[in-house]
Image 1 (tube, one colour):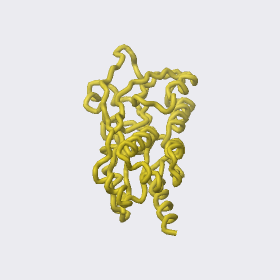
Image 2 (image 1 turned 30 degrees about the horizontal axis):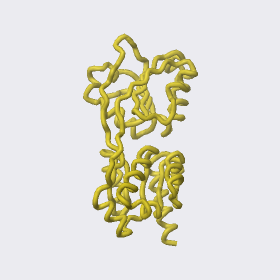
Image 3 (image 1 turned 180 degrees about the vertical axis):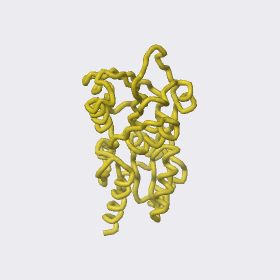
Image 4 (image 1 turned 90 degrees about the horizontal axis):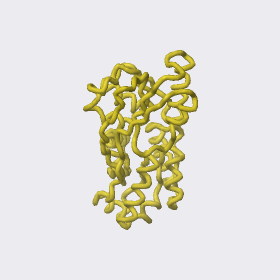
Length: 248
């Protein structure tokens, strides 16, 4: 029996390794594919800090970073995973929030209270094409100027790998891990197109947040579990709980 990971490449490789060290067999079916978008900066704008809500935003423009003059700026990362990607890309000053956009907003606001940033600072938000929250608007309402630059998009993968379809047909997949709302939707669309939707919905789905879980519930999944906090350690704990429940 295998655990199906829908997380996109390259992060899915680390997830698979972590699951294998826990004794699980793993199948990979990345539901989304990273497509970089060329950075279109405003040369006349001087930024005071950078905001990032995904490691993919850093990866997508990594080749351009040395020429953009951003590496010397403080960078506010949504969580430790994104912070690690920022440090690897060359950012020296990285401030880490609690794992979601709300905590990132609060971290920026607290930095203004602590005089790390000015209240009217100009912030560069490196973002994906599909935003689940208007972080720029929320910070703008607090007096910041936020310039949002799309650096990547995540395109749905239309088909599941053959071994995954065969796994569903043979009832050889015991749970699915989901990391974002969009990837959950893409996975469901692909499962429907491949004719394995009924089998896919019949097993536990472990989700990083309640927002992700809502997509699975709306599709008819009856065993949907949500991580206590939006991080992979908590998601793995949720997976173990789901598997114990199935065995009980």
